[in-house]
Length: 367
Image (cartoon, rainbow, N blue to C red; front, side, top):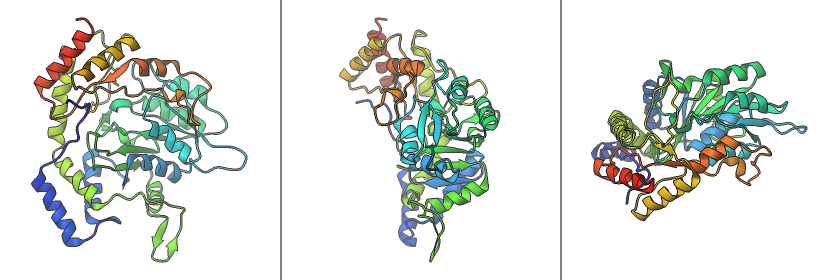
């Protein structure tokens, strides 16, 4: 069995040392020393300020909306946020959970990120924010998006769940927008089993978010915000600290896997056009086939031999009937979503297994 991804597990002895410390201190949560250490180390590694660790990537989005006032509503209108239909469901559902209506704008056919022209056309008097996604770690047109937001006085929250460590013009991609959120789910390039983080542009937003993730409690007998429990615990942080020590080896191994795919797969399979001024973290290996029929046939053939490929992201969210569907068809998103497959990528994927994957794809294409 070859899965589409496999969680990276660090050196067991190193992890045990962190766990021994947790047992000795008996401090399991509530901003423990390992959470504090991981916060410092991630800020240093990612070259960002105002980073807040949380319990998962979905709550990272929801806390960001709250901290920035995007979820504030009045009795006359429902706040709206423009986002992409070509993403994981949590990008849109997190908005709905906070009482914000997702309004979809279509994607660029080459980068698969939100098309700035489509964003501007979707703005209404109720628009409070733009929530773009750095899809598969590919940098959005951040300069165009931030410019649109400035002209219309909108907040920007980048869903950067795939963009761990990505740099743009020699600085962290996470430094763009009013906030950028990360997912540290087990399937991600960097993970804490479950977990996430928010990087805020302004320290005052970070300070408000710190209250929000701890029920709004600011003292033994003081509650200042309508908060929730979104804290990261010490066991999650221990895993993250171990993985951070080995992140370069993980990145190097994934880069080798990606290079072998690029060398062996035919040019007829469309690749994502990467932003020329952004780095690549090799978190995913998406390819787009000539037709949905072809993509499904290849997926079926791979499955017959125990190889998992996933249709990230299918269906296009404008087709999902959960109160987030769009009256306007997102034609580009629907087209890409129908023809895409993400191929297996993880550090331990062997050359032999990868050769089998490539051969199955070539056979499925009749090559």
